[in-house]
Image (cartoon, rainbow, N blue to C red; front, side, top):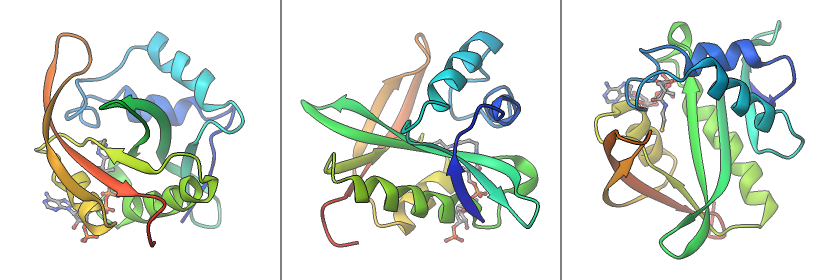
Length: 163
Ligand SMILES: CC(C)(COP(=O)(O)OP(=O)(O)OC[C@H]1O[C@@H](n2cnc3c(N)ncnc32)[C@H](O)[C@@H]1OP(=O)(O)O)[C@@H](O)C(=O)NCCC(=O)NCCS
């Protein structure tokens, strides 16, 4: 398993992740083709912080992990997210891929804190945060997408601390 920078040909993988109602259960429901194309355009830019997860000798693409800068509580931080297609879930892939993406974010020495905001009912994502050494700060409510309210956990990792 490894992660590779998101590429121009990776739109079908994004459609599998963001267009699938089962995959988007904890993320406000599936996104439409226009929104997905807009994301693709940002992801394929060099240095976007977005990666595809590939497995095996053939390099089959099975998921996404990525981080981006955002404002949070008067600070500029990184947020990270991940997704693995259903046929490859439950094998530890998301955890391993996220560990690799964190190492890249850490090596940039750009933002100190990396946050993840899984919904409180997203058991595997909360397990990944716990396993990778994030600290649970608090529960918070997000409006995402507009009009939909999600109850999320605010997990934080110190990228400048000991890894
Ligand atoms: C969240 C997601 C990426 C997890 O992918 P995955 O490759 O199956 O995750 P992993 O195999 O690395 O498992 C993560 C951990 O969750 C645990 N886990 C899985 N299901 C669980 C459950 N129902 N209850 C508690 N823990 C669970 C696993 O045991 C594993 O922990 P371990 O390695 O200590 O055993 C995948 O379910 C997904 O893509 N969901 C849709 C998109 C999404 O919700 N993304 C998250 C946005 S923050």
